[in-house]
Length: 277
Image (cartoon, rainbow, N blue to C red; front, side, top):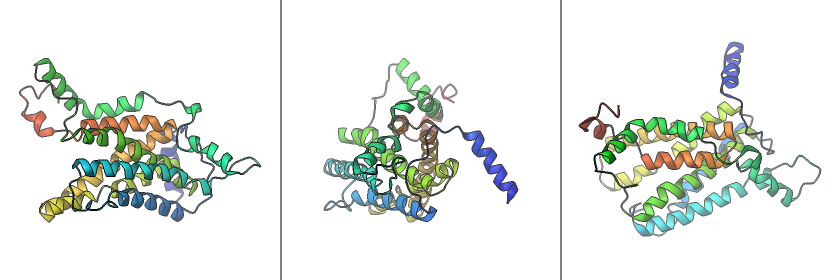
């Protein structure tokens, strides 16, 4: 146990320093912190289905897009406010106003940490060097792709603006403070937090089932989506704790949504695929 503890401590030290400071919340038990994160995840996903007919409507239908963007926008405002009752101001004055004044720092909007760092988005872009090189080759060849391919302009707003902002506010800026106040180390919090983010994407299996996809394909697709959303969530959580900047992880999220999962088949079938690879 001592060896494991020392090893984890060494890894924790190597992953730091963390500019995000311990939030003035709690203290909470680890189970209470995880329950709060799970509650936020359920609230976020549940808000997608509160509208009449939303359980059977296509997620890309314009009416569904409008309604869901409204509901997740409300959730992303409620989630940070739900932290107010457990904020503990360090000074002798404990009022709603003093608690609210601490909220921007808790959410990663503190001027002391800056707003946006360029290194994390640049690091995220290295994951997509192949698709980016392919797009550059197509542009040189006169067959440039559109900036973003979508069935409807609202899908562009959902994927590149609304989803990055609301998901990072709820699943990072609101959940990570709970986990840290529950006694988890920054590294542990960065590994636990994305599990709730991954679980929140499992509901896409319902629509795939409704569309008639085989159960086996749905299971594999769900496991795959959970895996890569959890991996991205770990990356975003780590960046948030390292930088203390909410806008930085929103930019990373928007960039990854813009690129989507790399189209390996498209890259390999390209006449000059050796260049992107």
